Length: 162
Image: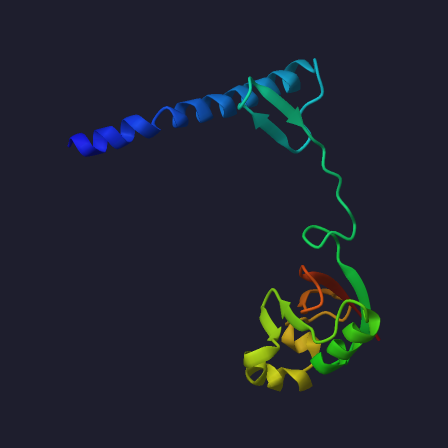
């Protein structure tokens, strides 16, 4: 029983101090909100306690072309396009970024390159609308596109032209 007590005694002080910092930040932001005495924290707070106490708030700006939260790049394709047509259109539309893309959708992987390519080859002749389970003709679809030439996943919004 002395072994667990020794471990707990050594790490417990970090937990209350972290909780106190978070609680103090929450109370401060609540007071700002209720009294409107100061603008509230926008979306990020940094705490540095290595030399005294320093806090800084930063407002990150959203970029429209952000790979994580942006609206994605738009690509127009025929309403009757197959997955193979979409892959060719991706390479033609983004020649400096894509060479051999892999494509995923929220319903799952549509086409993967490399060792799994043969498992997804049957999808190439399927309609992209069927693969993405779209029912309405005016629906758009968001695809996640990966390629060896790009560092991050590219979000591509497919718009169907009839």
